[in-house]
Length: 177
Image (tube, rainbow, N blue to C red; front, side, top):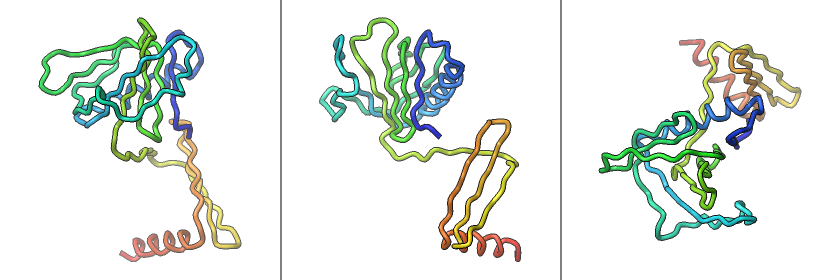
């Protein structure tokens, strides 16, 4: 699974709507969590990949509240502030591995925002009653394959021989209870 999800205003690619929905889900899930909010200037012709994202004095860490995406606008509240804040976006790039969202405004693109969840978060995939299969190789290693037709999701799990034995023991222990 690709860990980077990108959405650009005006993109008519078949995946654009799904990408925006996944980013919206991540943004909404931030509510009540501590985030690192960073803003950096960008200049025409500059390489956005070369931005220095090391912590600087104006960077903020706070618990974000009420985070939601409506249309192409991100909304949120800062602690101890009754005012809902927002930014209309023209570009979003979510890095699931590093749990960070890069944002370019749709109005003027002279700055870039980066919102980071500063704790380690594991991606969670839940599939219910999937199709599955397995192959145990002659060296004891195994390949497990799970497929969810509704989500069009396929998960392959490669197990070492020792993990295969551990899994077998755990299943047998459950069977005897």
